[in-house]
Each structure stands twice: as C-alpha cells, then as structure tokens.
Length: 408
Image 1: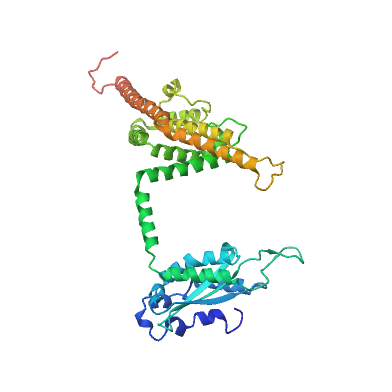
Image 2: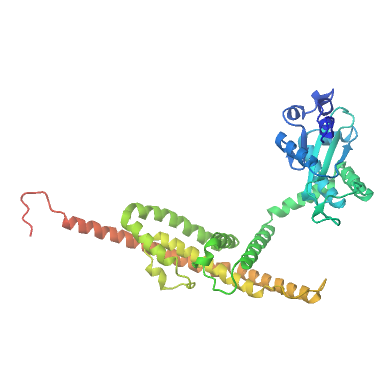
C-alpha cells in the first residue's frame, strides 16, 4: 500500500472497474462518481480511503489480499454496488471470526471488477486496525506475526459464498414466517414486555440500594426520563390503561392552554409556587387529599408523572432486593454450580416481579389517572369561578361615568 504500484491502485484501475463492456452494467454511473471501493458498511469516500491507507502503512502488520470470482450465471448477484455490499456484509464478519480475528478490529476494502463480464469478481484487502496479541518480548501488544489463514476458515467462507448463490427458499420462508410473527399481537406484546423488563433491570443496577426511591427526590433527577419512558411503555401494554392515560393527557393539554390564556399572570405565579411544592413530595405514593391542594394544571400534570414514577420505582426496588450479586471478595470456581443456581433463582424471581406488574397495570395506574382527571375538572371549575368573582369585583369598583350618579 506504500509503493507507486500498490494493490489499491490495481483494485481501482478504470479498465478493471469499468471494463470494455461496461455500458450494460447499472453500476457504471455510480462507480464513476465515487472511489469505486466499499466495505460491509457501504461505499467508501475518498477521505475514508485515505484513512485506511494511512492505517495500512502505520506499523508492522500483515495485509491480506484475495478475490471472490463468480461464474457467468451467478455474476448477476454482484452487478450492482448494493448487491456487493450485501454479500460482504453477510459473509466477511463470520469469516473474520473463523480466522481468529476480532471483526470490530478489522479494516476491509473491496472493489468490483467488470473487465471480465463472464465472471465478475470482487477484490478485497483486509488487515488489523490495532495490535491485539500480547507481546512476549516487550510490554504492550503486537500484530499477528504469521500471515497464514487456516484452510478451515477458507473452506467455510467458500461454502458460505456458494450458499449465497443459491435460491435459498428456506431463508425466504423463514423471513415470511418472521413477518407473520412481527404482526402478531401476542408476539409484539411479548417483545414489548422484554424491552421494559430490560430497562427496569438496568435502572435497578444504576439506582442506590441504601436510600428510599422517590420520583421527586434529587437523586432521581438524572433518571426521570427513563422512569417516565418505562411508565409510558407499561401503559401501552394495557389497552384500558392506555385509553385512560391518552384521554387524560389530551385533556390536560387542551385545558392547560385555555386556563393560561384566561388567568394570565396570577395563574403563572400560582403554577410556579405549586410546582415547587409538588416536586418535593417525595414520600407520597397513594391517592390522598394532597390532590386538593393543587390548583394549577401544570402542578397536577407533574404530580401525575410522579405518581406513575413511584409505581415504577416500587417494582425497581423489588428487583434490587431479588437481584443476586457476586461477592467481589470471593473467588468463584470455573462453572460454579452454586453461582449458577443463585443467578437462575434470582432471574426467575425478577421475571415473576415484572410479570406481576404487567398483569396489574390497569389496577395500579388507572386509579391515579381517574383521580387526576376528576381533579382536573374541579380545577377548571374553580378557575372559572375565580375569574367570575374577579370580574364581578372589578365591576363593583368601577364608577359610572354619568354626572347624575349620586352613589354613596
């Protein structure tokens, strides 16, 4: 890659890339506007190619070069850039694994040659980005010393490429079956539950175990977006809870804008005061009289999120209590049976906790939705009444303009 005549120059030679009979290939215009080289991620820009060339010349390392040649019948499978990239994406990663490489540590550069239309072929070049082998003679790491790729890895790659040329009816049927599953209600519900279960487990790992978990506490501030997201997804898992939640949020949005416009500065000042209070109601989780103390929709909306968040955090605490953690001071045996048993029991209990949550979503969330909805109606009525009182008071204090008015 460092000389005037190098493999990259050969791979991108116009005569090789285009060929004499190039006008019949749909990729010609595309290649003429690009560098003509690609990897598993797509076409490579000139800047990306410069970086690959720089890495190839940096330090002592092996550079492997080869080609994949298709016969005339199968050449149709690689006659466009998209087809070539798809082939590389589906085959090279496993090839790197079979050859003992780290796939994420490899630079790959490919080019399609059209100079022999009867058998189109792809030239490729790959090498390790960073040394990964421990250096026995000195500190640090070195690149793989020997450049030999095992015949077993090559044979597997050849088999993989031959399979790619077949009309894989089995793969097509499998994809059709997966599409059916993806549209199935039960499949989608199970998938959503797995996602939520994973989020709750991750959150349990991040939150402190020695402090109470309250949505309004300062410690929860960095995690509130995640807690809100989990609550939203849980509600989506239950049609009844979803319907009630959606109706409440739409009503909050509509009436909030209406009251802010009506009440002006007084309402804004009241909202700021109540928000400060409700944001520090750490211990409140049950429905109670504290709702009656809220007179603005902004405070009610935040309190609604707090209530749902506290439900999530209660179950996150249960997950923390049932999660088995390894003792950092203990050295475990390889394939330790006791460790496996404890981890299995822990996972089973956590699944039971989340399954119980999924089955009780409506009972846990809907009462809070209904209570906040009722309070929302009351707030609107109270605000309208207050506005009428203010208007009546203003009318009484206003003096008539008539000169014949002899009021006291």
